[in-house]
Image 1 (cartoon, rainbow, N blue to C red):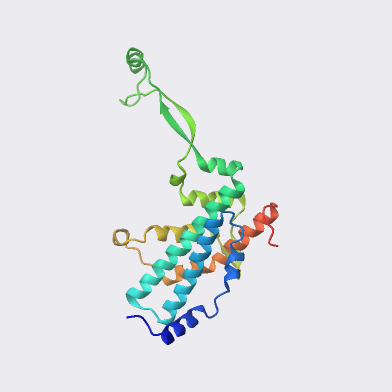
Image 2 (cartoon, rainbow, N blue to C red):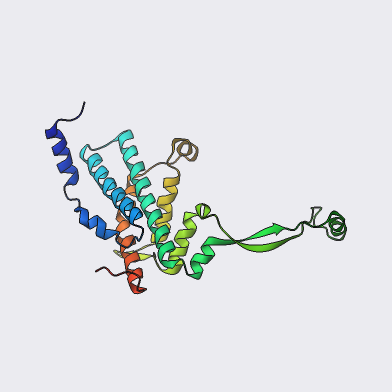
Length: 231
């Protein structure tokens, strides 16, 4: 049975209180070039803030608090991932740093005739192991297999995200984003049991608090490189 209209209004008013207007979210991520991705990020951020207020309102405890924390981490980690991916691809896809991120050196086995291979085996030996003729080739990675940690490192090299000082404390923003993302990867019950992961409320709060310097740093870098105008 649904809540009464009065109850729903009270809940909606509480959750919406002190949250920004819609245009603020639109402006916050206006550097995202992909229209659909921009829309999706805005929706995710708005919904995440609303959900936080809802669970705050019921003073969530025990399993409900764990559920809240897990989903806050999941949401913010997904936003960090989408923004970094978009920023690197759309603005810095022509850089050497991005090219290095998307390529790796692999060994490629050479197929040679059997008789020549037998001669090679007689001439070459290493610790009793078979010697296989091959060469090195630089190949493009499968985009879906590029590790998020490597994307963060590339963003650091390019100066998109970096360390900053807060109240005299040095905050390594790229490393903290990696930490948030690593917890996100453990958010399913089997992994949680295997890794004995404890989802902490402070980490979910950190995931939210770091969004401010994260977005500010990106906009500052894009503006410096002539790729973004806040007006």
